[in-house]
Image 1 (tube, rainbow, N blue to C red):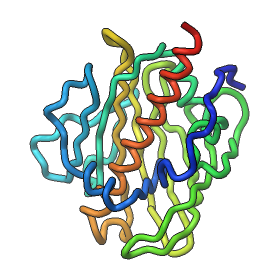
Image 2 (image 1 turned 180 degrees about the vertical axis):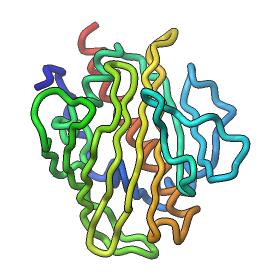
Image 3 (image 1 turned 135 degrees about the vertical axis):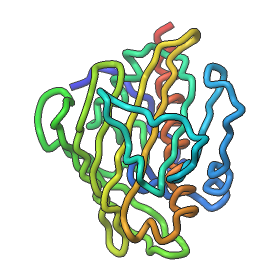
Image 4 (image 1 turned 90 degrees about the vertical axis):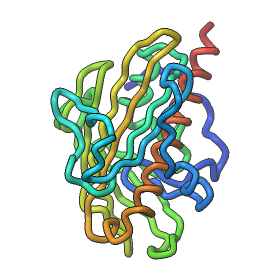
Length: 231
């Protein structure tokens, strides 16, 4: 069990989704769908929505040589600089049982194995999602399986998300953590596959992007608040 002190939950409604189906409000969804590749990763955040066949997107993030599904039509990558110790950031991200303490939309979390998170670990969690133009409001049950993990360096997990009237067959999510001048560069990339989400690739990509940007923002805010408390 982690000893990292957590900050209080952020106010309700701060964001509406997470790992496999980060559904967000229409305005946020639209704004994050655009690529902001001109930003400097050491001073802020950059993001990129990519689709299969785009020759301009950077090589996929990897963990121990494995990355996302390069053939996936729905994929998104983003990064930000977090001004906090790597140990704090890593603990927040890898102690999945405490996600509900800093990610308000995680309504339940259960480890399906015991001990420290590692390759082969599984966890099942739920998050409510609002209605979209093509799907009903529902609660997703997400079963995540850690495929690769290197302490304080990277983690890669995958799994389906299933709710009433809504399904993502599989999502693959990669995180990289790199110490740089001024903090830690946190990079993340994810893809979705499944007939339902692939029926509207631009909208699904925008939903995915909105959720990843929000997740990074929450991780940054929580880690930096913890760092300030220990100055």
